[in-house]
Image 1: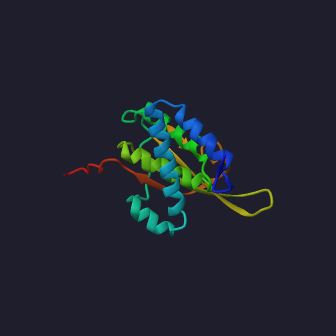
Image 2: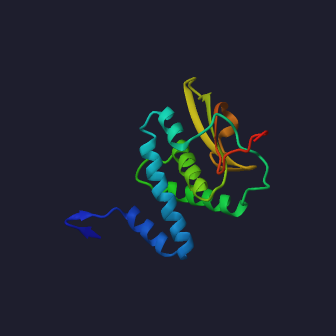
Image 3: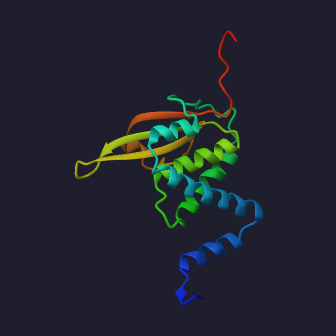
Length: 166
């Protein structure tokens, strides 16, 4: 395909064919994931302390209880993030995926916890990783999390916690 004497990357054609082959609900979910992956990529360039404030994150963890978690929705978000991150023209690695998934879960009023971890690679250099959990389910980054030591946990609650005595 040519557009003004430039070749349209075949990757875009594959993405378009993929999206057009889906049912409307899945198509919208994938488009949402792609949009939030782009948004999270922009956020990655901002100081993390500002991102924490934007998300209204607490230095805490959410419950690991599955009682108030819609597993189907969490699984759908995880699948959409994983799939669409392969089709972005920018790097959509662990932190970008985790932030995008967190935002998608927030829209669905589902609690989640963002984990940040560090480790040393084969050469002895410090490396970082991010992953997201909702209830007992890992939404992103679970495949590598065991290698990392947790250095920060950030809770995003859908509803403010009820405190005793109020």
